[in-house]
Figure 1 (spheres, rainbow, N blue to C red):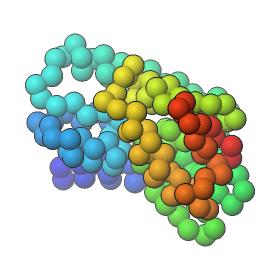
Figure 2 (tube, rainbow, N blue to C red; figure 1 turned 180 degrees about the horizontal axis):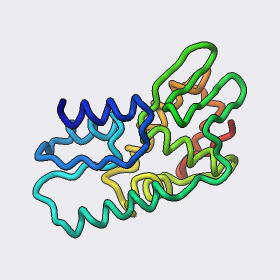
Figure 3 (cartoon, rainbow, N blue to C red; figure 1 turned 135 degrees about the horizontal axis):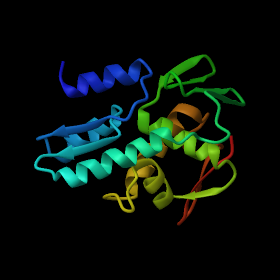
Figure 4 (spheres, helix red, strand yellow; figure 1 turned 60 degrees about the horizontal axis):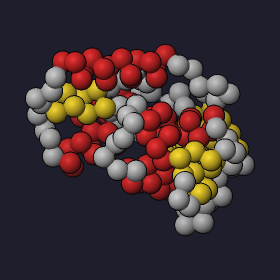
Length: 170
């Protein structure tokens, strides 16, 4: 099995260890696919050992940090989020979460009621001061809304605070 299949398999089994993909595939679509199936980071060859070590340390720091106030299963209204198994259940339907979606939800829940900026999410989830674009966050939020919101076009749980970021109210 290739790295993408292995990553997908590990995430489907609920394995939450950090995964950094090291690959020669450097096209944007390859990076997006790798991150969306559950990789925590995607590094293309050639890369410096120093940068790789810094990324590994950042991911291990986040992996060792416990989220305060976020249980393994979090429920609100008719939504149940199972962080241990990367699942969302709403009204009898079940959706899989990617590792990034899970981390975003955990962080938003830990900051419940507070406005969280896109840059803060990029820093806390990806570990970078700046990522290619804050639209990355918007795309993940859109996917999360489809899984937890009754009407994703009119969200009631992940609220957009225009010009700033998001507030979780669930």
